[in-house]
Amino acid sequence: MDKELLCLMRRHIPKRYHHYCNELYSQLLCLQLNMKSCYLFDLFPFNMTQLRQLIIELGEKSYLNFESILLNYSINDICILNLSSIDKLIDSARLLIDLTTMTTYYNNEHPVFDELKQHLLWINSIYKTKVLDFFDPSQNDEWSDIISKLNHTTVFGYLLKYPIIFYYSSFPNLDNLPLNNYRISVDIDNKHISNKNLLLYSFSYPNHANIDERKVKKFVDNWSEQLLAITSLKNVIKHIDIKCELNKMSVWCL
Image 1 (tube, rainbow, N blue to C red):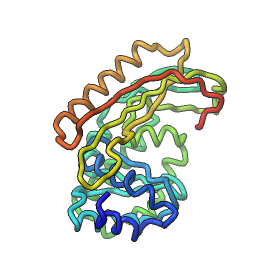
Image 2: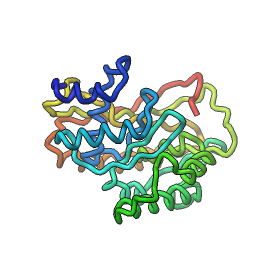
Image 3: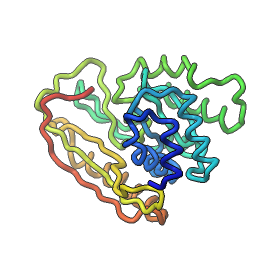
Image 4: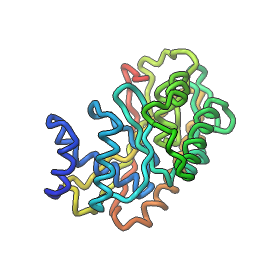
């Protein structure tokens, strides 16, 4: 990472986390390129004012060029979204897996996302019409209420535009259930960053008799083709690597 960019980021980031500067800037760059819709900023406690100022200064120095939306995800975690990708985020097709029943749905077949979509549409209209005087993202109680009623993995998967999203109405027993895990990495050609390889997406689905693996694989393949089409238009992306591995999980993080 070049010295000027590194100094700028270190002014806003606690010293013990300075080694994350390259990762953070790389993820923000992928947001700008619309290769992902959201980045969950969970590396260290950070308030929205600090993060907003960092993004503003990165824009002023021409390191970034996109309009961001910040939303609370949890007490210490902040979602950074690219305003220009909100419409695609809301409209994109997903495969929802109910872990309680091991049933699959397309996102338009299940009402779990309705409130999320409506609230994002409302925020989108506020930013696009520039009516921001009465809107403070850090005090967005309606958003906090919506995500508190959903599983964190559901909200997380939806905002990050995963093709497969988990949902459960009661805590499922998933001990020792194998997982098919997809990991998608890209090589970024950018003079400002040192580590060129970046993990862009990592998502999974259970290896279970009730889940049609061919249906899931076809859905993920279509999603991957769309991602490849996007990256092929970006000169900054030199390579994309998609891997799927079967892993046995002793404990699920839900």
